[in-house]
Every structure is written in structure tokens, then in C-alpha cells.
Image (spheres, rainbow, N blue to C red):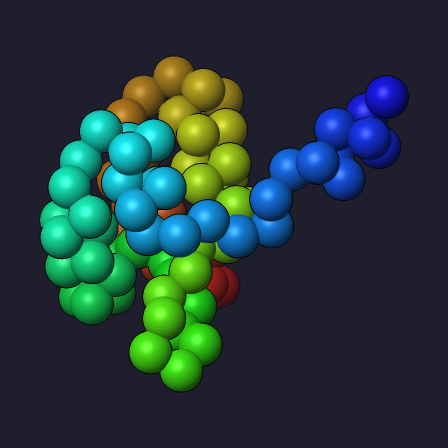
Length: 79
């Protein structure tokens, strides 16, 4: 069952999808990506967000029981 759920989960999200999940505008998320405070992958001109990044931030917020700052999370994840 867990393998089936994992297979159904997307590996990447569009910027618009993540913005909707987080309740913010796409432009706000594009700015965060541009200034390096949110992880994304550029494929030619298109930006995609790894699902692991979204899930990792959510998990960190739950485990730590506090607000996770995306920019600090990105810095910590890149080590």
C-alpha cells in the first residue's frame, strides 16, 4: 500500500501548485526562488519544485514544532 502511495505522489510540482499549497501568489514564490530562499530546478525556462523539498519543510515544521524559515531550511539542506 505504501509503495502504491509513493508511486502516485508527484516527484515535482509546478510553482503555481506549490504557491496554492502554501496559500501565496505564484509571484511571491517566484521571487523567493529567484533570491535563493526556496529550492527549485530550472529546466530551460521552466521552474519546477522538488516534492521532497515541500515535504521536507512540512516535516521539519511538524517535528520541530515551530515555524520553518524556507531560506534557512534551504541553507541547511544544501550542506
